Length: 102
Image (cartoon, rainbow, N blue to C red):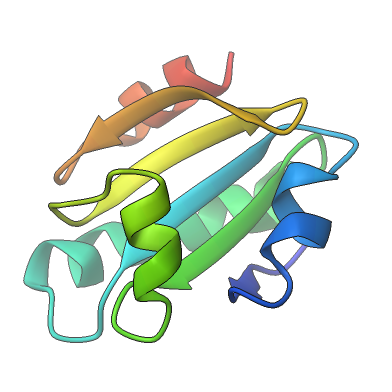
């Protein structure tokens, strides 16, 4: 499944009401570490049908970033049953993301 572009308009439907775990990638176009993490996040979206992957641009959706306490990017948050379950900040290896999703 392809990555979903998360916005303040669709966040409730795509993340909070999802019927499976959701990996939300808070990022920005100008962020170097975000660009380095992007291929890993994209691969997860393609390889795993048991999760959804949603990318939220913090510049375009500042209220979502504020609501979930995102002050540094990239920030990854795993949502389960509509609530944040696990989080990581900064560039992390694929193995760490896999652990978050386990």
